Image (cartoon, rainbow, N blue to C red):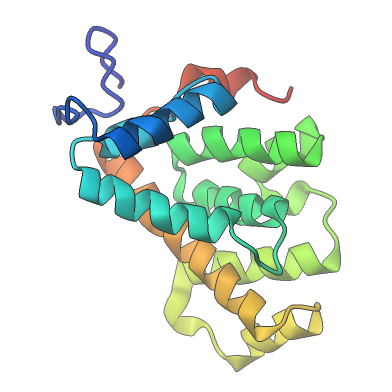
Length: 192
């Protein structure tokens, strides 16, 4: 659990680099200005600026760069994968993102609990079915799984992006669980 005395974002005693390099501090300042907080996942990585830069570079590329997947679809993948993995941090943070991007608090809750409870279109269902199989049994992905995505309207670049977002969250879920990473309290009240 987050140590309320020191404000550590994980159960590990990894001190932040202090002072942060100017570019990192600027990034944290932008987060504070835009989000009203520095996400604890960033604070958790701040013990090693090279690791933080690698994490944020990949996250920003997968979740924010141009893609045939909307930002909402990428967040839906994050939540579906995190739900399977029972990652408290990512379910809280990315569930809030689904609520915000969709404008539908109920969708965010359904995605967190069971994405199949949500009223999704055929494209979203195919996307999350693939992400789920990749999470639960990746060695069983076959051409028919990729073809199901094509049949739902995804091109091969989109399939790459679906696989990459799902794989990224499988990795980050495991790191967050292993370190008892805790979400910022602000996420709980967002977009409700």
